[in-house]
Image (cartoon, rainbow, N blue to C red):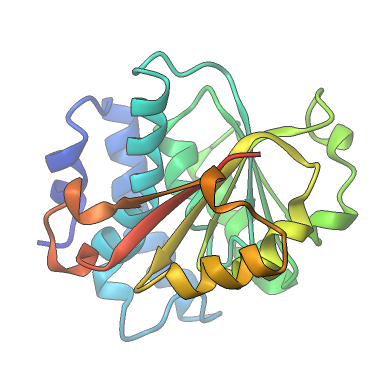
Length: 220
């Protein structure tokens, strides 16, 4: 099963509008992928499981973190690529503001067009690097609540990029054994291991794809 049903399986509270927006993602990504390769062409048919549901593991975490009473937040998706996890999260949380950032302009063009097609008024895609962004140009605060990412780069590179730019933490989607990567980041003193909690996504979603997928919560 790789369609909207796999999203509805885990998130039964979706509105009709959200379901419509999630359903629209497949034709939008297929259309854009024929022009610009933002998702591997061998993987596009797995869009809902490998990309959308994977992104929504962050939604699962946020719902549990705030006990379902999610406040209005500001979140930056750094290294968004084709719009993951930012686009699915913006659909899921219409009251949260999302800034999707990538250094590759053609990818940002695709992502902003998808945002516009879905009429996601709570999301914006920009070309840039985290350390160069003037945060107050996009949100009223001087920091984002959360920085989210999906397999952008190693943590010892990533964490210094966003240092001082968030208040609540980093949520990083990773695959495989993360111990060596965490050890390297700790050795370089960019993170303290006691400030990291690793969640096994297979405990939330039963599909085989998630057997080695993890969500790292890195506190500030």
